[in-house]
Amino acid sequence: MMLSRECDRREGICFRQGKGWFELASAGHEAIAAVVFALQPEDYIYPHYRDRAMMLARGASVYELALGFFGKAESSSGGRQLANHYSDAKRRVMSCASPVALQALPAVGTAWYCKLRERNQVVVCCIGDASIRQGEFYEALSFALQEQLPIVFAVEDNGFGVSTPTASMNPYFLGVLAESHRQRLDGRDPDMVRGAAVAAIERARRHGGPSVLWFEVDRIQSHSSSDDQRLYRSPAEIAAMQTRDPISSLRDGLISRKCLTRDEWEEEFAEIARFVDFEYQRAEGASDPSINDVQTHIFSSTPSTLLSSGLPLQGDWTMAAAVNHTLRDLLSTEDRILLFGEDIEDPKGGVFGLTKGLSHSFPGRVINSPLAESTIAGLACGAAVAGAKPIFELQFIDFAGPAFNQIVNQIATLRWRTAGEWRCPLVLLAPCGAYLPAGGPWHSQTNEAWFAHAPGLRLAMPSTAQDAAAMLRAAVASEDPVLLLLPKRLFRRRFRWEAERPLRLEEARVCHEGADVTAVAWGNCSELVMQAAESMEREGVGVEVIDLRSLVPCDWTCIRHSLQKTGRILVVQEDNRTCSFGQAIIAEIASRRDYWDLLAEPPQLLSRPDVHVGFHPALEAAVLPGIPEICASIRRLMDY
Image (cartoon, rainbow, N blue to C red; front, side, top):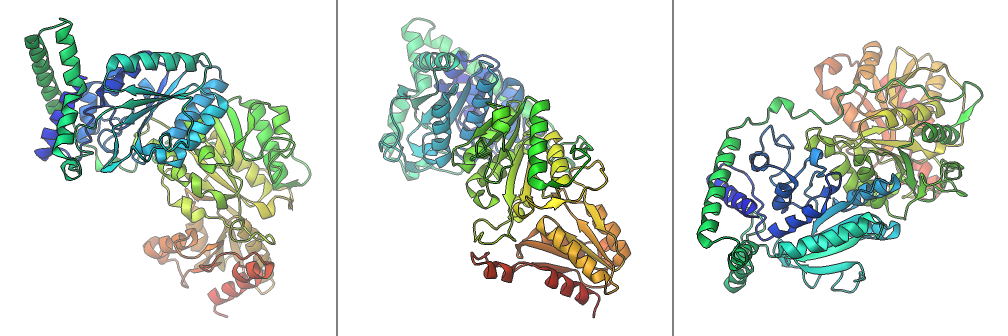
């Protein structure tokens, strides 16, 4: 506790001297560190950004934490994370992220997978009192209670969310959440903290379910170096906190029990100050991160595996059957694979039948989720961190909004923000797209542009049964998170068998060769472009069709090689136009001389305009690219 407090003081001095960029003090929260003494080394901690003392108790050194404050190359994030955003994979401390409550669902996912594997591990999830108004905390607590998971939520209640008092806002005060699983405690008393933690953690380890330990503490300093609590807290209130300071209470208690004298205390504190000063000076002199490394650890450095579809070499396949067959085969060969999603258990087997029969064959590994997309994505992350190979389904990509926070802020960033220390290999399956009657605005989107914008997330969309199977296998083999969008219009279509060829996840496919125009598409539009190419062939125009398949990473080499032959390019997509992936392709070509110099005509984009897809089939058809529109665009490129 004293060590943590002195680190706070030292960081404050460094910040004021211009030697640091940001400070988050832990003063007042130190006694929460006593939770660590109830844990085993194999247990997991999902920390709060005021848990410096907890990190020290877990075994982190002052030097390691000082490296994080200065953002040095040797720090746990290589200078990529804010100060006090702790992470330590070797000590099972999960990387802390800034969006509040983001850790709650992954923590539950880790606890869930530990329980499924009968590992007898416990997870502690630390969270601020203001954060529990986030819906993700409610979802996490609900699932933990539903499954009676081995997790303890440690709520660190300092009474404020930055400047806003929280007492009247927390859901327990409002009567929204039951009190049966919550215990209120004085979080300034390390003995009380330890006693409560021992009981709660041992209960969790004995399959007694989750607990919420509500620790009342004080935030003795301002929220951060960007805040001044004197603007919203009275001098009397600030002075009153000092009388409850856990460090002063610890000192007075030790002296009153004659464990040490005041002089001994002062001598020890002085020695701690000298040690902390030395370690921070040493860390300040450590190497800064290299700007040449800033783009490392976005994806795994391991080359993607070459994989075939794995389908029997006979007959025609629908995409739905190919996905179902592949999932069955994967489940039978890899026991870490876990399927989770809305309505995926039998007898329904998913709204599109992708998981039909699988829960009967693999009980306990193909599991219905609650109607909560954030839960699906967050649990996938936590399970992956614990060693699972999650294949989790979002029923429609149109409903991915609640999961967006977990996907773009947690899953996609984890490898990069920890400089590769943590990784999150998982697969999110999501039916997508239009060209089906009566889908309306919320069952007809592809939304690939939303997710292509998130560095660290692989994004793919197959257009054939074989590719769906092969890309699913490649996604499971990947060491990165993969969002696999499946065009539902193609689920029941029968695909003619083609010669089997191993596939890399990021590899495009030339479906039709031609010398006049390059047409790039993916998903539903690939089939339409193929039909248009066959039509244009009768007019003497050779269209080279590229089914992109992988959007992130994109196979630029394939596009450039085709453009060298044709000098003309048309991109066809069903997503709407502005800020779309199709526009990204056009922008890349227009901004690079090695592409630009190949062009005989300006590149063209055929897209849904910036309008939603209507419910009536006529409204849908009016806004989506069709074969006549594709052919007209090719003719314009050929200038006739």
